[in-house]
Image (cartoon, rainbow, N blue to C red; front, side):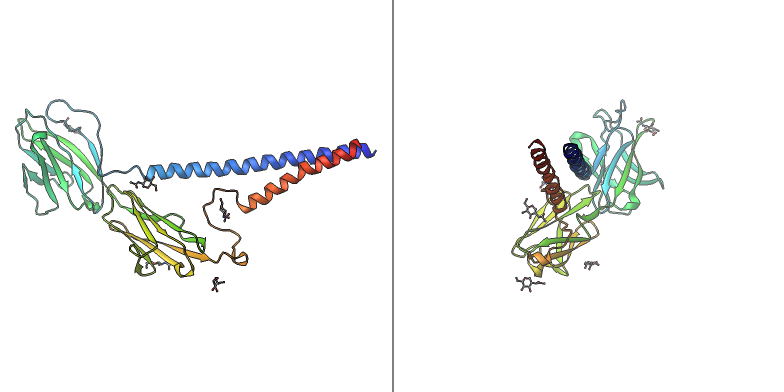
Length: 299
Ligand SMILES: *[C@@H]1O[C@H](CO)[C@@H](O)[C@H](O)[C@H]1NC(C)=O
Ligand SMILES: *[C@@H]1O[C@H](CO)[C@@H](O)[C@H](O)[C@H]1NC(C)=O
Ligand SMILES: *[C@@H]1O[C@H](CO)[C@@H](O)[C@H](O)[C@H]1NC(C)=O
Ligand SMILES: *[C@@H]1O[C@H](CO)[C@@H](O)[C@H](O)[C@H]1NC(C)=O
Ligand SMILES: *[C@@H]1O[C@H](CO)[C@@H](O)[C@H](O)[C@H]1NC(C)=O
């Protein structure tokens, strides 16, 4: 009777151990999926480069630049609409804005009374690019590069204008312990050019050049590092790029004492979190109990 009872207990304990292990495994795989999708998003954001040009098929004869080329530029930045013609062509090159059929340029002359438009001519390349600087959202649309031959020949270039958005990772709140390094990453989403500057503010004070502060520039982000933080570093941090609306985050510096530790620290930490660790310890108890019960049984 006692023998059968202890066998039953062993069975139950083994079942519990298995459910523990399966649960741990599940928790970990969910975490790694999260991390993977996050990395994927970051990679896509970083894919922007200056004045993205997407070319399609190559038309015969007159033009080297592909018809229906798409150019992407950020509002406030510079757009260059390409129009490269073959060397054998001697016709005059004009640019026409299609939505209102305005003649913008003829040869090297700008016709429109708007000095944001200009021809960027590179003679030996036969390039008659249309330069728009600074680009506005309202400039988006179709442009026609026309070569006055008999008959005249045209290609179209589509301009897309993006708005850069600044975003601080981890916003709106970040908690960290006194004595650690505060790291804030300000991502510039939809940017096609690096900003000329990114200013960081603590409350209303610019801190880029403070001692203990490092700002790492990057073509589509800015990283702020504040070393050895204490309570005086509490508060509102704002990332203000030259080409985007500012973005803010609230930083809470905690005394590294036990009673001040909040239940849920918002740290990025690669090690097992405290709830996970408790669960892990709980799982480790079962094999020990099984051994004890088995010993008793065989005795
Ligand atoms: C470019 O495409 C437009 C239509 O999208 C067409 O009217 C034009 O003839 C094309 N140009 C060339 C050089 O093929
Ligand atoms: C820009 O930042 C990303 C991620 O923060 C990094 O991988 C990359 O090396 C940085 N590029 C430069 C030029 O610093
Ligand atoms: C942080 O500062 C910015 C700029 O001064 C302000 O727009 C924002 O409302 C502030 N945020 C908080 C939570 O105080
Ligand atoms: C944090 O720690 C400092 C120095 O150890 C102490 O002066 C301060 O009162 C503490 N603040 C809180 C809110 O406990
Ligand atoms: C983060 O991990 C480090 C070691 O990897 C550990 O010392 C620290 O206590 C951890 N922090 C939290 C909040 O779990």
